[in-house]
Image (tube, rainbow, N blue to C red; front, side):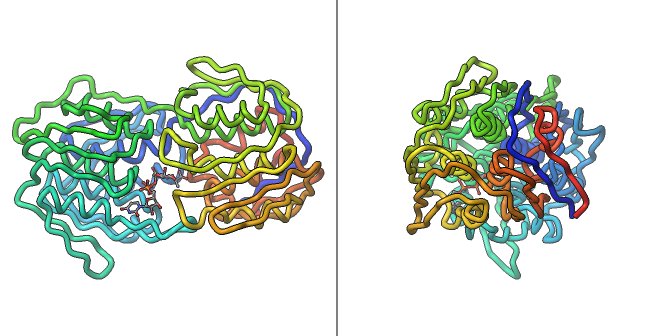
Length: 422
Ligand code: EPZ
């Protein structure tokens, strides 16, 4: 297993281009199951999660062609409706094939996704919504078995604005008879990107990005191939937030581009409140040397609130800011795995139930640390950039799931970073 060695402290400079969004790619790759034609994606990010998902589509019978820069999925060839455990266990987002398989093939067998480091990650909201649309669902031997005589549009009110459940139900609604209305729907930019994909392939979707989404179901037998079959996924807002915070933590002048800053307004507002000097335009953000920032308090929340996926990274910044800060995590029950590792690097963080109290310190110590989950890993990188001396970061396969070319991108920004065989 590789590890990263960062020799700190660092000052960064230059421009970093943000890759396509992992959390938009995954549901949109699942949505290719719905449309029996070839669909081409430009610039899919080179991430292990994306490669796994393409493998899942292939295991269902889809043909694929090309590399990640230009990948074509031939979903007319899909002829299986079982997503097997071996692949699903590697990535819980595989549950997103359930809705499209059920909608197009009237049946699906998908391994129940396990929990993960940050929480139990149940799928009850996904399943109850599908049942309201006429699916018969049983769970046997760790698999979700779903079948239907044909899904029907339904009025579904989500108990929580779950991103994955919203996505699964939007996809299930495409070949359902009648209109499906999702109330208390997730509003994340990735939901809007999925809706735009469904719209490009002929589905009428209204209200994506708001709390109520309406999907007008159609009859699969009437489907006609869509000529303009190329799609470009939005920039990864969480990757972008990570690099903006890196620029501020290292008191650097860098430009982070090829994403929509409005997708991380809550993050940028928080950073500005902390005293960050940012230049924001419609395609990126420039960080200016802002010195030591002031602490603040944040609560993670569904979009447009502060994103849970940027919580660990902000905590790292708070750890070297003035005064004290408080981070309250409301989305996942165990998303403070980064805290013990940050404390090993000299940060002063105390946990109090679902909150962390951070007292800013003047400097960090290099220490051997270990990645535990994707976003926690990013927090360790950020801290290693600032710590005096060599920080050794192990188990970086977590990073490879969600940060394309992270090592190369930080190297290009001037970081003293090496990737070595552990
Ligand atoms: C998506 O996960 C993202 N993953 C997560 O990003 C992100 O943290 C999360 O949304 C919240 O924004 C992808 O898009 C692939 P949820 P998802 O369903 O869909 C509970 C990353 O780092 N819940 O909105 O699984 C659930 O337990 C990852 O890129 C139910 O109780 O998130 C959690 O507490 C991590 N029942 C909360 O809702 C359900 O049926 C939010 O989950 C579904 C969810």
